[in-house]
Length: 432
Ligand code: EPU
Picture 1 (cartoon, protein in one colour):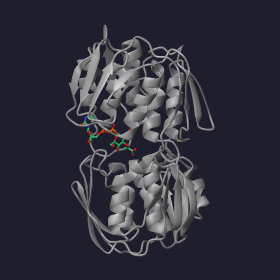
Picture 2 (cartoon, protein in one colour):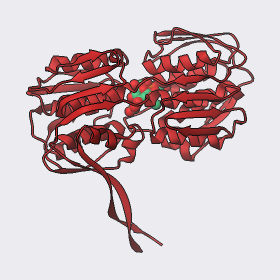
Picture 3 (cartoon, helix red, strand yellow):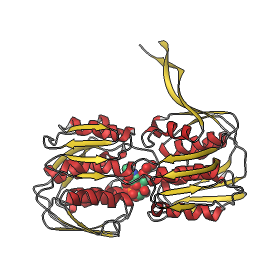
């Protein structure tokens, strides 16, 4: 047995500095991870502008290259030449690194009528089945089997169909669109999800020559076409990143302007923050949040869009530690998305989880601690807690945060935060 030292990257945050200035939001992660696979359906190069520089985007780039795609990516602009892509099996490796690798199923099926893709990875937030995706592929004529942890999809041809989703799933709505745009005839998706990212993907596909109506409503109609061509597309801003900065500004700000945000996309959060006593000024593509004096407790229920997003519930829970009174968060989307609460309690927060509900009381001064980013948005929550806490907080397992937040350290430093990424030595025991 050998004891050896290996490096581990962590975020180190000295709390207490008030955030001030301007911060710019990047392109939407949850659009990016669908737009990149969508390009497989074209017969000439697709250019996507404004992509966030996050590990999920780099992983998808690698996956496209694994199947023969020619991809360049610099300054947020990705050029994807899909002409030489082949439907090679992708059972393992990179597909396990992110949830959105499931979009390769719809895109490969749409183009080649067959695909083999490993079951996806992603954050552990409770059960995350893909039964609605599979129901959609089967309705379009594919035979779908699960063999040794990989999904096999095979179709003689894809034919349009009427598909009613039991849950308004973002992933299933997009995946069925990807498979249906080149199917024969008309597909109708009923009880479709309405998130802005779905409109963004439909816009790209339409600019590639697809015929899609109703994206952004709960009924989407797609008339299949024989071919799709390359195009240039600019991604929408990330409403979850924008929302995270809004929460940070309300909790630890002294005048913060958030740029490159569509205020309409974050309305549920804006309404909740106003209810708590936060002043929010909306101007075209900017949101300004002046210093907040006292915050009132509120109850929050996460819902599908346009309801309060589950993805913001975790950072929002940190703000609730600073309110006067007791607040209740109910997550109706995921059954186990409260792992941040235990970590926050290490930092002196008063909170507990009961099933799908978290109960948080305040105001409580937070204290620095060594904490673990158990998943992407829990990581953002702990960064915020570190910004507010007395002392030096160390956030570990930051690979989760870097899957979804582009240049977070630099952006927060730009607001005056004392945050840095450092490599610490940890003792690892290996058996030789
Ligand atoms: N669901 C099913 N069956 C399915 C699909 C979903 O029962 O076939 C259930 C899920 O278990 C969940 C609910 O439906 O309870 C919503 O799931 P959805 O399919 O809408 O989520 P997703 O597509 O897996 C995307 C985002 C998530 C975000 C959710 C909800 C991507 C890559 N991920 O996930 O983003 O929380 O929509 O808005 O777009 C994040 O960014 O941190 C993140 C987790």
